[in-house]
Image (cartoon, rainbow, N blue to C red; front, side, top):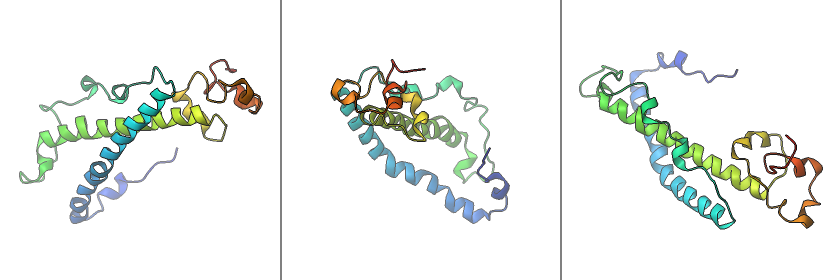
Length: 168
């Protein structure tokens, strides 16, 4: 399995680089989340207008609060200095129970919605299309019109990701 190498290099980084890098965690989220939320609303509206039903809600992508391992009482902290935010448990609770799971869930959710859109409009196979199986639909745009269905490649006609009557 390919792995990103980070832990082996972290301890070699000068402290000033680590401190300078911490705000860079939050800037991309602060600058992209508003646009992603707008994108989610637009895509969901599009899907509803073309007949989409039984679309998973955002909450299906958010981990249950009780599934988090730590509470404020036992959350590990980095005891650098009382002046450093990382010294406080509430900082880690914010990051580990809110920032990380909610932002990852938001990006997973928009990915799910975009997969549905692509499967609906473009049920044509490519080498990554099997990765879309978690957003499978009943029939694609090309399957609902018999005149268009005949134009599809036989494999695209029967693919179970965009044709629930397709071969399993």
